Length: 112
Image 1: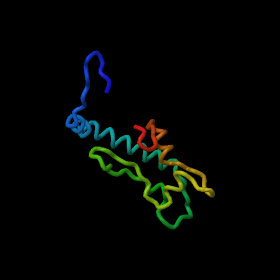
Image 2: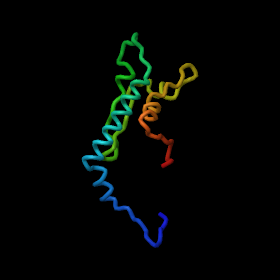
Image 3: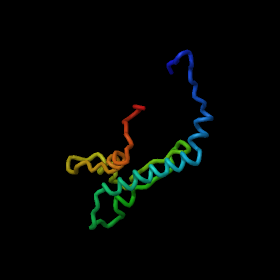
Image 4: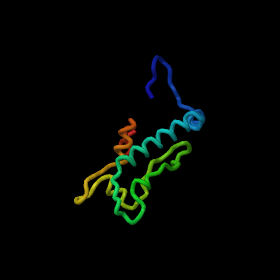
């Protein structure tokens, strides 16, 4: 981190953890994840002729690996192809579009 006028900020991991697990942040993260999931469901293709569970019904919010985080996932085996497309199927991208609609910017890889 760059020093500003002789001041150097050193983040305190315990403080960051405490903030991330505060009730207001946990509620905000849960609300944002739920909003993304609902927007993704609205963008998901729907096949009324399907025999199994519909793709949109399998878009759920789960706890992330890091405490206090949430992950929006589509758990149907065809989820990847519906998100990115194939040579025969267009990219519906319901998860990406859902995130975009609620103002979340997605970045690939380690771009943080």
